[in-house]
Each structure stands twice: as C-alpha cells, then as structure tokens.
Image 1 (spheres, helix red, strand yellow):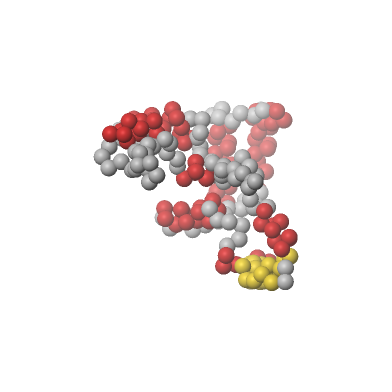
Image 2 (cartoon, one colour):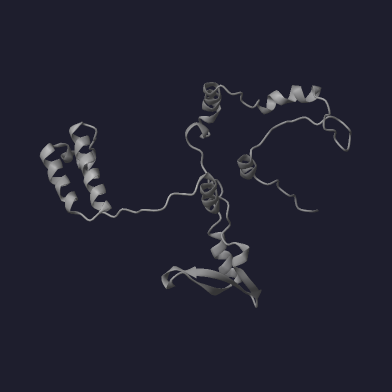
Length: 205
C-alpha cells in the first residue's frame, strides 16, 4: 500500500539524515543525538499506521488562481446564499457536512447574523495576503531591482521619475477646472490601494 511505502521511505530518510549529521536536536530532544537512543525511538515508527492524503492535481494555472481566489477575495457569505429578509430575520442557505452535504435553510435574527458576519472581517493591521521572498516589504526595494537586472529586463520607473517625462509628453491630461497639466504624483498597486485607509469624512456643521 502507498502509506506503507511512504512510511518506509520517510523513516529511512530520517535514519540516513541522522547518520549524515543533518539532524540537530535541542532542548528536551538532546538525548536523541545518541545513536542507540535515536534507533530505539525510530524503531516503533515502522509499526505505526500512517495516513497518506491523496488529491487529484489542479487543472492548470487558471484553476489554481480560481481556487485561491475563493479564499482571498470572497466575502463571508455570497449573495446567492441569501434567501430572504423578513420579520427581523435573515434566512440563508448552508451546507450540512454531517448530513451528506445537504443544503438547508437557517433563519437568524439580524443581530446574530451581523455578529457572525463581522467575525469574518479582519482587524485593523491584518491582511489576507502576505508577500514573502523578494516581494516582502522589507526586501522588495533592494531585491526586486536585482531580479530585473538578473533577468535582463527593464524595471518600471518609480513615481518620481514620471514627473519630468509627464510635463514634456504630448497630449497631457488637462484639469477640467483650471486647464493645467495633471502630473503623476504616485502610482499604487491594487494591494496598496486596498490597504490605504478611506478618507475621513467630517461631520456636517
């Protein structure tokens, strides 16, 4: 069976890594650094039942993007699941996994529905998507130009570099009020726009 093959290869790889000095034991695990103790700890693993989870591969990049988009850009509940709003109650569809994934209706009071909905809103300062590696915030300014250099491609000029070229370009955008040339002050990505706080609206006097 596949789980037995995987178990054997994994445990053998652990044993080989130990003999090659690739394992580092700290704290309460320091005793495992001794060969006899490690062998005694490793031996019962061959008798354990391992669970190997298998899943069909994704159907290409487009499907991966669609799959991840459900988690990164969806709201707590989609509109098609909302059935009715009547008598101070919201009724929506839900899927009961304990009952063969049957779709059922659940009525909730307005307060309870809003409480459950707000549980899915991230607190201030939290984001759904984080960039790592050369796109991480701390390293992007230095590593991203290096990536462009190594790939032999030109990097988009920064916002400050656009100002001079904008002034001399033909067909400048004109302000509808004063007729002056509009200048590019800053360029924001979609993620940066989303992270910007909305403008404060002052109360009417």
